[in-house]
Image 1 (cartoon, rainbow, N blue to C red):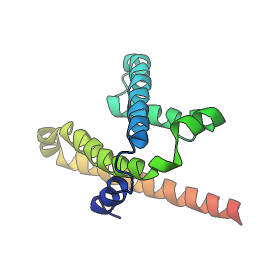
Image 2: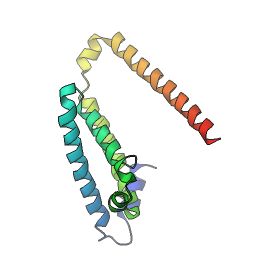
Image 3: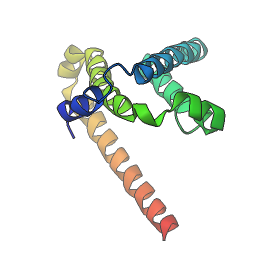
Image 4: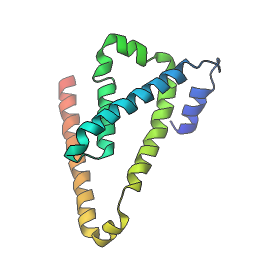
Length: 143
């Protein structure tokens, strides 16, 4: 599904004055920024970049940790705003990858093309092997 279909489903609903998903999404964004800033203060002395702090904040605030608490899950994850979440997730994923691309040092990569391509291919191979091993382990657990 592409962004146009997400936008059509998320925005064109029967009740166009239903601001509840928008308010919930705004609260979640504010909460995400506060927790991300806390992780920034904790992890900056160890030399971790900003995207790592954002990813850790997303893991803490997502359905894997804090939203396992039933009251928080009912308050912050509402079924009426799932389509808004999908639309925003898609758009912000594109923006996030764009910002990571802005941090790429292209002149360094041109000077050290062999080293940069070796690191890129090693990352691809490592992720492929990890994904294959994870898939095999999960499939064996499901049987």
